[in-house]
Length: 245
Image 1: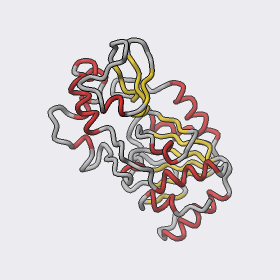
Image 2: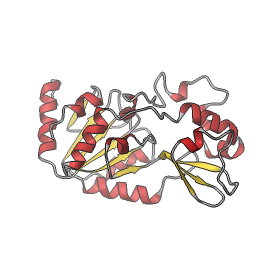
Image 3: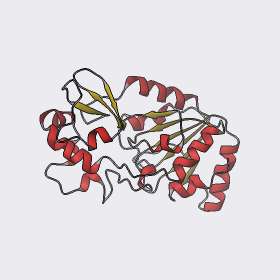
């Protein structure tokens, strides 16, 4: 593996050019360049000085027991309405439009891939832009319904709204998992970006890849090896932004 960025970038472009079935698997690092903090870095959500540990607040049991406290944290620290897609999001959408990228598998809940124009986005952990009533099941789209509510957001039927995000103690959607496994297992090229590969079961999805090329783009170390042909520690916006479509 070469240490020369220009050479690695040229090789990456060659891989992209020669691939017709690319899948992108991404984590929080994809969105940090859009101003959204991750969870585990020094400035991440897990290191905030808060009344309760953030890991506890974003658990299902805490949501059920202290919904008002949950929503106070959720409004302040989980919704970033002004965030905009960065160069990585935009390039992935461009690759999809060109017929090369078949799917984005993301651990993020911020909707930035869709804002950039991506269509086939598999959201492993849900989205802050979707909510539903726990009583009648009716969906409530958008973040405004949560931000504009006083106290605990409620449905017109009187039921409590819950964000369509996967909290601790909750399982991932079987349908989304199956679609992600299918996409990754059929891909020629897998780009893994902005993730330390430490969150399971999401991180285990890369094990289903059977194609020829794995490219890793992550500023920090990953918790496991994935046999990457190319690895970049540079900004994901820089690396993806320079890809030629």
